[in-house]
Amino acid sequence: GEACKALPFILVINLQVPAKPNYSMVFYFGANRPIRKGSLLDKFANGDDMFRDERFKLIPSIAEGYWMVKRAVGTKACILGRAVSCSYLRQDNFLEIDVDIGSSSVARGIIGLVLGYVTSIVVDLAILIE
Image 1 (cartoon, rainbow, N blue to C red):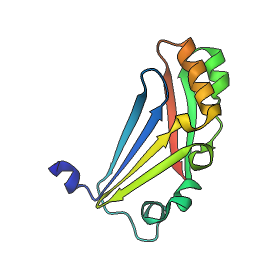
Image 2: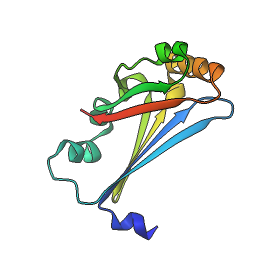
Image 3: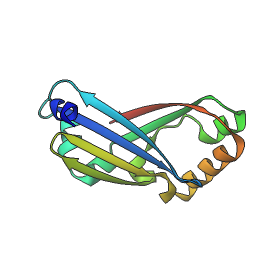
Image 4: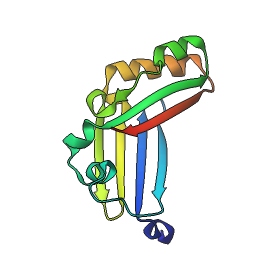
């Protein structure tokens, strides 16, 4: 809507979780000032998909959950574009990143383990552009 058009830049991250039914965790980040030209964020937002795939990183941490799930997920950084399929939509003042977690058999296995053990979970996610 109009509120979105008022922001100089919006980043949308859609983590698509394979399950029955499928889930999406969608994060919205809005900048209150324009992206500085030549900055890493500018290069990421306006670069090509290959550039983005090499720089979009996620670091998970299970804050509350079974030890087995914590161990399976770990806290190791993952460059998402190398591990799973990511698609990017850049228009006007926003960039959307769709992360297909189900595109990796390893990630699917971890998600299956997590969903098989828990009824609720608290995950801290660090999202980086390196």
